[in-house]
Length: 131
Image (cartoon, rainbow, N blue to C red; front, side, top):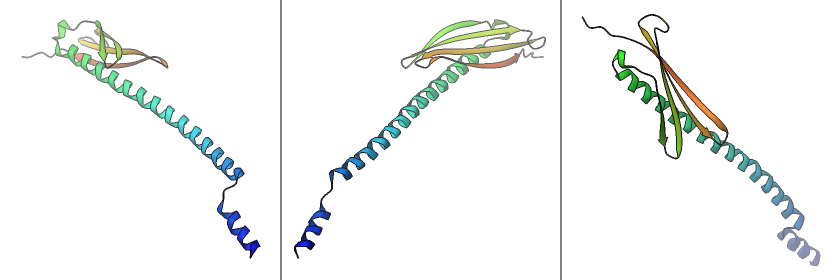
């Protein structure tokens, strides 16, 4: 009877070794998960900045295209979106790639912790003549 009682009592408790093994597995899995989450948060932030930059580029491209053909001129600007500053540079090349065409290029650049990033949007525009 005494032997059975010891077995039952011995199986109820958790040894120090089991606790240390469980804690070690938890630490390894938490470290792996936290590294993954940090990379995902950085990637999401970077993707968001690219999306905002493309939207800024499209806005400037549409502003240039809204002007008359002869009034399309190069420009540069800074746009503040949230806490980020985007440098916008618009170039207009006449007779490129062919006569009576204009190539409009909008480049948006910004600084982030990983370094300087930029995006570029191009279009070709022609004068519309009404008869």
